[in-house]
Length: 149
Image (cartoon, rainbow, N blue to C red; front, side, top):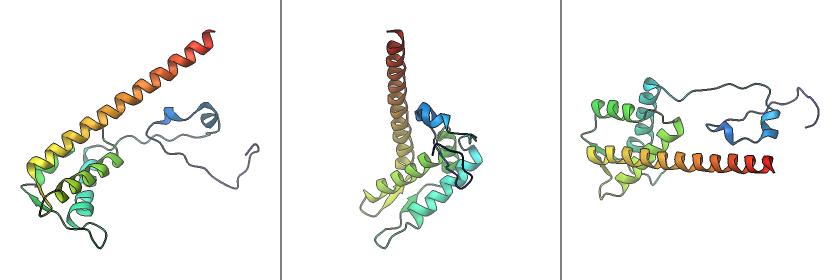
């Protein structure tokens, strides 16, 4: 705004704060870091999203998913396999489970598809991370090249 004011508050939220440019960072007075969810939080999220997207999906045309051979042991394994996932990534994983089930005739999600979807989701996240790292390295290289001329 150019002048100090106590009439508003702006909150920025990002799991990639390095993406903010210097002008934005200069205007941030206080920063609070929230880490990625731990095992207990991930377990609660997985349960919440299974309920939300599989067992009681929203919308009048949504179909409930039938899970086969997916119990507490499988959920515990997913909690372990989702180490490093954000809350949004876990939500997207549950939506991917729903899509996988909707791809079957009777909206069934079996144990094999449950775990294959986790593996595919993890691989996709790793690919995105690789792309972001390359983009950051390229940007740093360009900045270094510009500063040295």
